[in-house]
Length: 341
Image (tube, rainbow, N blue to C red; front, top):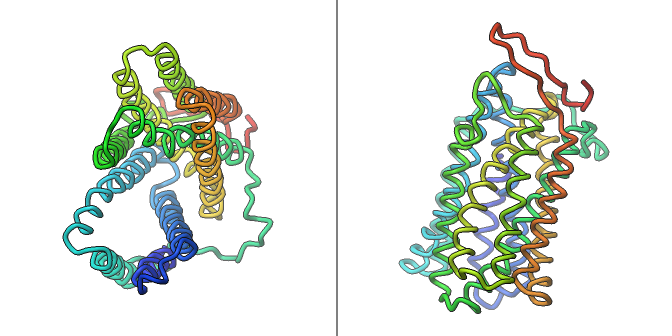
């Protein structure tokens, strides 16, 4: 985590070079470094939650993972507005400098106050150990890949271009709407345990991931049907976006809990890191296809492809381990995380 914070400070500082150095290649390199830094911090935070919460407190673990994941995304959406305010008030270099300074303070606080041995591995893993040997982690990573490909295949490129080009929204309105959507998405994630109806006695398993992903499959398809028949546009798109955001937030929170739960305690960061590698691969696939499919076949095609990807995630979720009934006397019989009963 400390390495991620330091990398983020370096990445921001790289944007403060003279203007003639700010070419496409330089900015892409900065964004790549910043992305790695972000994932190091995200992976470390999830891993720390797994180590701090007792093994037998699965319900508490789910609640803390949901709060952590939801607050992170809500702050990400808020960051769009905050970044715009800094840019308007202090200019590009002023805004970048302020963010770098704030992160430097957080980095120094982390160095001085957090436990240095938290999550520290007793042995340095080999490259071959990066890939998880747990079937549950592998299945969940595949489900995550398809889930995030399904979101980004219509949300990253196709949606903002469609809102601007087809519905006539200006760039400020598009940006504000999408940022607000991300904030609301994060808030829903933070209360996902209440929405999904699980708690201390019954915790999420493969059945929950399957059921919520199945419900999500219907939403992009319904929006695509409305578009194909020119029915209630843009109302059907906006309502569909809200429902999709709610269901997707619960799906994402369930996945976030399951990976932390499945992760091997001796190598939790390796399993969580492998899972986020699959997450990033899904986002890359969705982003590339979003631009290509939208340009070639339009918004409705992106939505049909989104439903297809969610369907693949549903199919993979069938392979995830499932718990059995938790009895009133506290006896619990459940599957282990290898996929064996």
